[in-house]
Image (cartoon, rainbow, N blue to C red; front, side):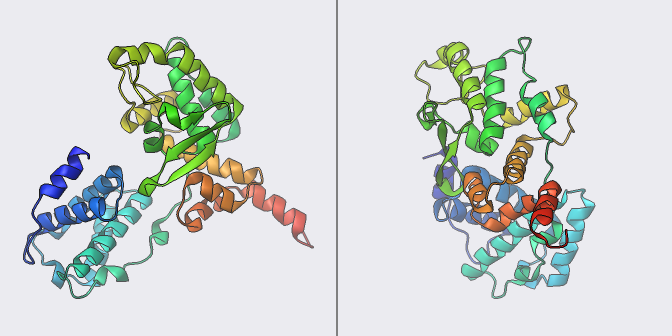
Length: 313
């Protein structure tokens, strides 16, 4: 059991008149222990609700109206949040209010009247195939761990996995002979993801030439696939830094992140003719509606389909 989960289980549940801070803590406990969300997801909900707490100040939640909450959305926009971040904050508040209604703190959930997150949803950033090639080839011998970094970048693009999922990969999750890996996604759901030959080659080079040296720093039996310079698990924050480093090197847009490679993976799969349902499975999306965002990105495929099937194209 993690230290975060232990702290939450030891915490007393707030009374009906408990302050907002304590109800946020209780909600965090509920998400972790009853909904079995990953700690990263729970931490994200908490950050969103802490921002909501700043806005709400001492106003009683039971007296908030839909007009008040609409003002909160405007306040988020004034804070300079990206549309995707605004959408996530709104979802966090809606789920929090549902929890408070279940606990009897609120008799009505006015947050459910807030607009759909689709209103703030934007089309994901995607890299062109030529930029992907340049990006994956960016690590070189002047870097401290070029083979690890190349393996990381290849994994991100080959699998479409989230940074947190890549960080959690162990040696036992890897099956290079069969060319697939097993990853643990949101809600502790496992899925199998195929690996292309370039990714397998990059991983094999890292395993042979760099990983033994890194593992020896702490424990040669270290189970994690990707290791940091100190021989420990490569955390998702470090993965973000590595991606940013090589994006800057090749002159890619400054907004590139590990999630950009996930978006790029999905878009290129659809452009190559992959079925939307298959891409949904590979990404680990619970809803196909989430995967459908990528159909708005690949205009070339839409034109091709239109030209092929429309009688007056």
